[in-house]
Every structure is written in C-alpha cells, then in structure tokens.
Image (tube, rainbow, N blue to C red; front, side):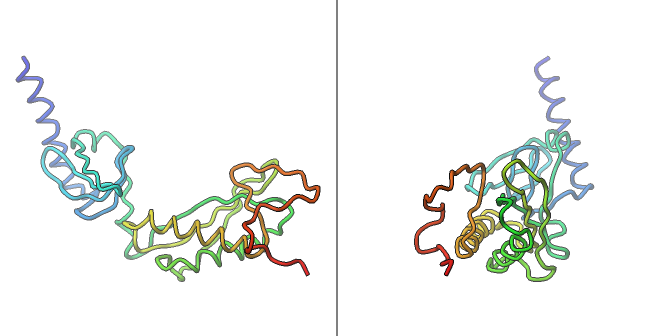
Length: 193
C-alpha cells in the first residue's frame, strides 16, 4: 500500500516533468516565481525543479507542485522587450504631479541597469486621503539582478526628492507644520532663497 501511494506521487512528478519539458515554461538560468518561491532555475529533472534564491538557498520544488502552481517567468521576454520593474511612491497633494513625474523619471535614469529606451513612465494609481500614489515603471534587460536594481532605484528616488526639497510620504506620514524641521536629511534640503 505504501509503495502504491509512494509510486503514485513519484509517477505524478515524472508526468509533470515531461509536460514541463514540452511546455517550455522556463529554461536553466531563467528568473522565475513558482507559487511563493522566487529564484533562478538551476536544474530541471523528471522529479523536481531546483531554484537558487537571491540569498543563495537551493529550493527543490516537486514538478507536480510546479504544474499546480502559477509560474511567472521574468526572463522569457526580458532580452527582447525588457522586463518592467515598478515601485509606488506616495507624495503629498502640495507637490505638482508634473514635478513628481519629472523627478521619478530622473531617478530611474540614474540607475545603470534600467533602460533609457523605452523611456521610464509614471502612472497615478490612487488619490488617497493625504497623498497621491505614483507608480514608476522602468524597463530592464537584467531580470536576474532585480534586488540590486530595486535597491539602487530606491536610493536614487530618495536622493532626487531630497535634493528637490520634497518629502516622501510613504507609508504614512503626519506632521503639524508649526515651524518644525522637514523630514529630509540635513545637507539635502534645497534652499528656498
């Protein structure tokens, strides 16, 4: 009985492995997300698919689980069309949206692994109670370096807005403006003179 149930699971993984081979959902080296697991494909066998996470962990996912989960392949179109990386920044209503667009695009242009063409673009995704949510979108052809690209992008966004004298209101920021200092690091505040 144990052999029957054990072989049924193994057989399911083998069949799923064969189906995955012919589906060509991903190949060795692709950056993927399978269910909740993200990483680079390092091995495909009949029984399991192995991924290396950005923390250098090796995760084995049974092929039947791969077949029953949704799979996102970040690499498949990246070389030709580019992968769009995106982030949301919230800025107060006191700042003109045109200025926010300009600063977000400038920040994206400072990141080496983001493409200049097609040019980064911005959407307003919500009008919240205290701020507007802006989504910056930029193309990259380096899907396996997403963590580093995002980190550098966040640095550039902060620097760009601080240099312009604009506070970022994420996630929620409340201040009574009675002459208190603004929330920008010293040395980065733009003179109002």
